[in-house]
Length: 422
Image (cartoon, rainbow, N blue to C red):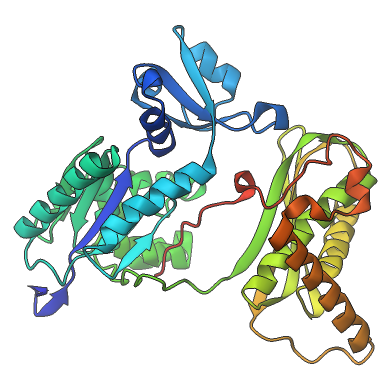
């Protein structure tokens, strides 16, 4: 049951995008606000007070994701309903929706909490049947869950995603091998996946303004101005992208593990920075041990009160998944690369160069000491797993009333993966 194009097997892929997801869930669970302009925000008291999502009415007032709460309020002269994000609820609803997708295919690949690709090549053999199947799924989501979804139907993942953006909310769009030049090529270059602000600026500088311009520019020219990403964008624009939708339960190779937080107040000295970095390092180390990985590179990122962002990284002499080592390296990186011109607003710790087994330890390191520290940190992992994160904390974080409630395992610090295999 596969489509054929020029003698090559062609897949039929959906990309589903739940409309205004966070805000729609809040309106679903609280019908009294359905007719209001609604924004879902972070916790203002913990300085996560920005707009994370908005409903259609709020969007009409020009409110954008990333606006501060006061900016959103200024744009909306009438009543603006502000709801603090409930990530546990959103994950629960997301699972319900994706379980419906899995009834239609064993290839369902999440692209964030509210989006997914679905390979339906085994169920349909042409785009007319594919459209009807997408309509069936769209109607089921409305009836069984109470949310609307936009679905793109195409022969690869890139065009399927573009299709889900063509008509919103609550619609199905089809992009085929015979119509993609008419449908896709007139779109702005930034509508293509992987074209961010920096890439867009380089394209515009070379008079490449649409997806069609990308296709006409040629792979060699794009490689000259964008490197390997230029080759990828050419394949994306010309419909040659052919990566598979992952099977249910299949995951990308993990390339890095990290955690970050915007602090409850600005940090003013190295002791406060040390406390936060070590808490983040504990979270990162715990996640590494959960997937049995070690890292040989540590990165620290920080944002100042002026919203300037920096990241620095350092290779390790030997792989580790110990919070003590990760925290120590992160702190040294910060000390060596920041002169305290401004106070610190947020911090992040990330590990890279991951491997699935520790290499032989340097002969100058005490292997027994390392094993003891590993055992101790695993005991802490176990206690927190049974009784919650707050059952045991570092003393340095308890000294500060504003930082004592910092919980790096809280959902507000977690970033939902937006992976793409090419």
